[in-house]
Image (cartoon, rainbow, N blue to C red; front, side):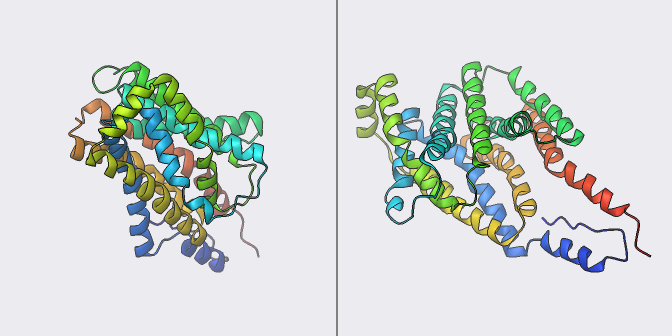
Length: 322
């Protein structure tokens, strides 16, 4: 998928060619971007399978034990204040995945979880506008309203494969992710993989304590002693393929192409989430799910592309030099 941006002025061929080449991915890199979002989308299936044998808080603790160890011994700690690292680690990893796993355990299907979690985009947008006074364009406001309609569609269909308690937990996970995105603006340029490893290192101890308190030692021992091969493979998928491998490959793409070219592929995560949950878990795809998915993705697309279209139009109508 390449977004070929063309200026309508014949006086600026060099600028037009630069924008076109910078915004187009080579075919192999396009396939790599699709592979990454497919991994992230199907990750929700792996989480659902792991939750069959492991309680959610214990699963969250185990995930970040293996994400951080032994990688923490090979990557230097990001050069950011400890307080900011704590805030980022707990909001991006601890609260986000603790609430996400809990919500999926309480009754949100894998496909819907991948969709509802996209609420984080609009949390980030709202925080940036309220605290940093960043300007929100009319297109972004329209995108938020359209996506909001999709979330309402999900909300009015609680029952069946989505419960109210589960939906609230997944929304809280999205809020935590959005807050983490907002705080990451103050971290500066850091090694993204090191940030994942060191931020994740903060999670296991408090999450294990929470598991002891809320899930109980008996459940923890029983889960660990009776865990099946499917759950173990699912944890391996979540830790190594979805977190360490996919995140590293995504960072590799971002280092070689503009973020405006790479990040729109993330719109496909809920699509792959819905498809993989239907194919692998047999989750139904009624009309309301398809409608909610279409609304949310349309809103996200308008949020991402709307400001760029306006900027492109502004460049196109600039008077040519004589």
